[in-house]
Image 1 (tube, rainbow, N blue to C red):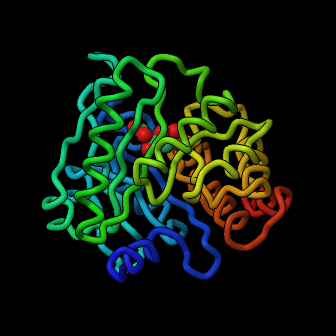
Image 2 (spheres, rainbow, N blue to C red):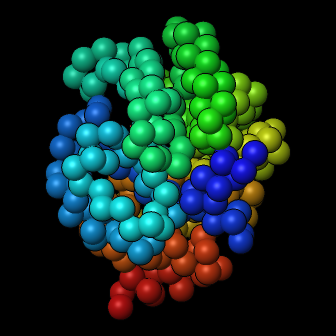
Length: 260
Ligand code: 5RP
């Protein structure tokens, strides 16, 4: 279908099938957290190195300046915040019509496999994916774990949840890097996989090594937020990640680019 292919080409580089997606949808859960207090400034700082951005409607319409190049992935699931409900109680927050009206290139939905809300989360994901596909709108399924943060890095859990999300209609799966056995996650998932970062890395180098390894094991790129805009050098970090994903830079080349 041409519409979906056309939109996907603004998310994944059609020449190499890879992508650097910058995630800045965290405000819907965390509020004005460090690094995205002023979303327009964060977007300006990182410009030139993003294939696409993950963003909520309120920030898209007030802070994003269309440049004709950066793909837009609209977050359409949400509900709970960090101070309220269990995060796995998320539901669909935005209609397909609204996403189309905003002219976005894809939507992203969290799916909470393994939580007490997994059925409702998967069913609403599947229904939304059907609706989006009627209009050629790509769907990114994000594996989310709710309270049990350890699951993020458990190969058995990530392998299962990535596959389940793809089975229910994801065109791209966003999930976590498990380190060991990540190849199995990639092999078991028919959709391309983009890595989320999570909150913590001791150093930028640790993140650059993680991304390099994940690409070697078959990941198609990243959909990462905090490890970019909470770095001490956000622009240097996104440039380094871009080099690794799109220019075959080694970790050493990427690090030395940050010192310039
Ligand atoms: C926030 C999200 C983020 O898009 C996702 O977790 C990626 O960001 P990070 O690399 O900071 O984990 O779902 O609600």
